[in-house]
Amino acid sequence: MRIPLKSFKEMTLKERLFFKFSLKKRRIRIWCKFHYTATKRTKGKHLIHVISGNCPKCGLPAKRILAHTNTAYVDELSNYQWVCEDCHEEIEAYYEELWAEYNSGRI
Image 1 (cartoon, rainbow, N blue to C red):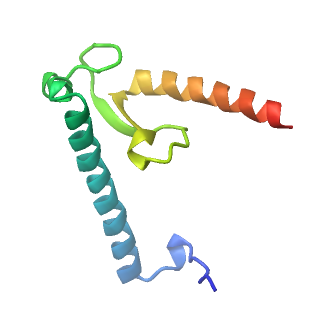
Image 2 (spheres, rainbow, N blue to C red; image 1 turned 45 degrees about the vertical axis):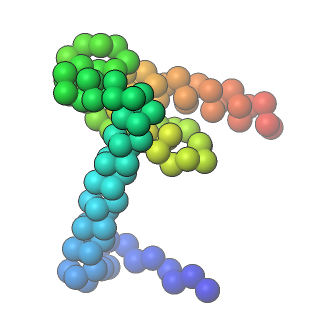
Image 3 (tube, rainbow, N blue to C red; image 1 turned 90 degrees about the vertical axis):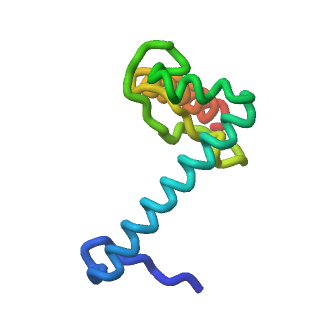
């Protein structure tokens, strides 16, 4: 039997702090795993993008983010992208269009 989840307002202070800490810890773990596997996969070339400050997709100097994309890969780390915000918006629009096309074919 599943325990119903409380809303954030209904949580006690201790539960709120634990929830925020666990989310932060999960993000840090995903960030570290993502960069470690990307560095291994590209034989160190990924570090050039991390150090240089350039977006790996467009090559322009910009603040990059590690963002979850609208994909459904079995490997959780493959669902993340390390790109600038503009490229992330383009990627999100692309996947939205793909999912819309896929879902329209299912009905």
